[in-house]
Every structure is written in structure tokens, then in C-alpha cells.
Length: 237
Image 1 (cartoon, rainbow, N blue to C red):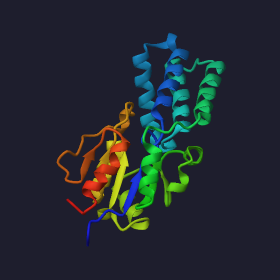
Image 2 (spheres, rainbow, N blue to C red):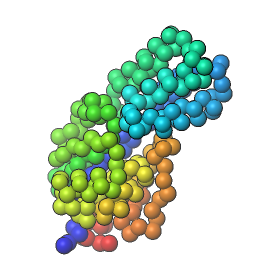
Image 3 (spheres, rainbow, N blue to C red):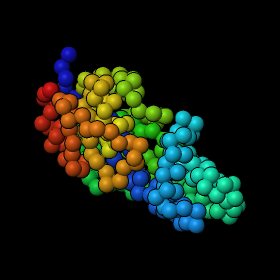
Image 4 (cartoon, one colour):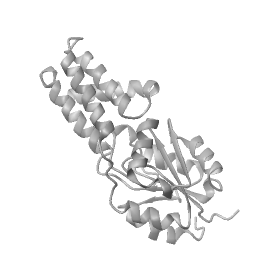
């Protein structure tokens, strides 16, 4: 089988549009609300631990983050957190869900150029309603042949998606800002993995760069993707 590239998968949050920035702003608001109950570094650590515990229950996304903030507020105040503070946390979560979508540099022109030649698949995880809202508001939806909103991204996820929406992982590429979710499992599935770092990355998405993997590439920004595809589109590696 030829390895000619036919299908390109794209992550959404912090690859196509801003996301972690709004989590950081909301966390800052949360820390201010609980300022008298501990140092910000300690409160942030407690919040992260709650998020870790709750991933299996709530999954990824704003709703789970909001519930984790409430849980943390209850814990660090020994159950004495006021109703007004909980109301503020809920309002902060609602503000995140209503925030306008801000696409990142080079996104639209890159996707428009590639959509004419490749099968494009959006592969994102998180809350279904929120991801659908952001895709609709971004105006990018028509550029994708398929959209997959999944609860998690692992090797089996990419094997399935690139078989269903492409010609298998060997002829596919995954582009994203998370080494743990977008790059490492996609490469293990047999596809190309193109890492486009974002200035802010959630600590739970960190992983080691697979520098020895022949199909791993790292780009400074999405605008460099088209030249890269030109280099590897012949079926190299």
C-alpha cells in the first residue's frame, strides 16, 4: 500500500481556536474568590487534583471544570463556602460557555487551502454541546468532511476514525497542540503526528516528545503545515 497522504485530522481547542486562555482567566477569578482560604499555588494544586479525580466522571470540558471548582471550594473551606461564592463560580462557568470563539493565526487560510486536496476530519474531545457551539461559531465547519467529538483520544480512537473517514492511519495525519492526546497516540496508530504547541497547555496534556519517531514533526505555527505536507506528501517515511 502506498503511504500517500489522503486524510488530515485536526484537534480543535488551542489548535484551531483559543481555549486554555479562558480556563486560566476563570481559574484566576476562582482563586480571588477563595483568596482568604490559602495561597494561590496551593488552591491551584487542589483544583487540579479535583479535575484529575473527576475526569472519569465528568469527562473533559467546562462543565466538569466548573463542578471541580465547586468541589474544591467546599473542600478548602471545610464545607463553609457561601452560597454567593458558589453562585460566582457557576456564573464564571456560564461565562466560559458563552465566550466568543477566537480562531488562532493562520487557521482559516491553511484549512481552506488543504480542504481542496485532502479529506479533513475534526477530532476533538470535550462536552458535545460546547464543541458543537464553538465549531458553528468558528465558521470552519464546512471545511471538514467529518467531525468526531470523543470522550478520549487514544490509539484505538485514531485507528477507528482514520479507518472510517480515511484510508487508514498510514495515509493519515493528526495535527494538534497536545502531545498526550493528539500526537503520541496517533503516531502509535501509524499516522503522522504534527505537534503545533500553544503558549498555554493544560498540565494533564503533557507528554514526552516522540523525537525518535519517523512520522513526528513539530511546527512553530499552523501556517507551516502546507510546506510540511509538500515535503512528505510523496509518501516519505
